[in-house]
Image (tube, rainbow, N blue to C red):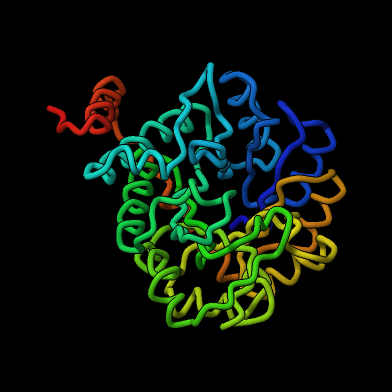
Length: 335
């Protein structure tokens, strides 16, 4: 049995360097993540995905952030552009659930054709009046029940297209008033309120194969950021009931203070299964991978279960799917 490295790593450019190949062969990361700097043409992306998998000698999962709006790595002229999720949901109105399914089914079709088999969505953070602008229009709404239903539609659209969904940002980022790419948000609300509103969509979707943590402090639970908080990870596993593979949000984000090796070890010790590293030097990637080490038994079990959820895509009539989506966005029932 292959014991996976407890990391997900990135690359610098359009193809892997010899140094990157050597590192990936050595540390055997569970998977990889793509960014705009890795995207040029369809053939180039397919070749890069082949590079990743050849480096570790297996069909490693490759993920991406393809939400639509600002957070969209694949863009025109080769791929569809999408409006921000919140704007899309408002446009679809009563047909939002069906429209979100079709939107992410088409996204999955584009991803799978490139060799990308995971997407960092659904994002079921519940929007509030205080939600920071970096996150607000990426949300699906302000009501936890409807957000959960829309999140389920997103996840099913991806799964039907052969793409693994990554539920984020566990246990909920909607009350953050700061951008965790640069600062550490603190949420001081009552735990009962958090469970009833912010944590509820994650509990409703606790059967999904993978999830991503939130880099923020929930003072009702712990003074440490959720990603490195054993108390919060225990709440996620036991209260929210999420038993899928949990990756950190990008360990190099400025919300977390300290060196990457210490942060990676702290995340694994807290209960995260995988450390995600997105932006940095080759030496920093090596530091993260070596600090995260190999997966323990529980993490390995979750990783294998996630990979088992990766199925071939169901047949898709793209023209019919696009026509149905257009009709829904115009307030019509297709067919």
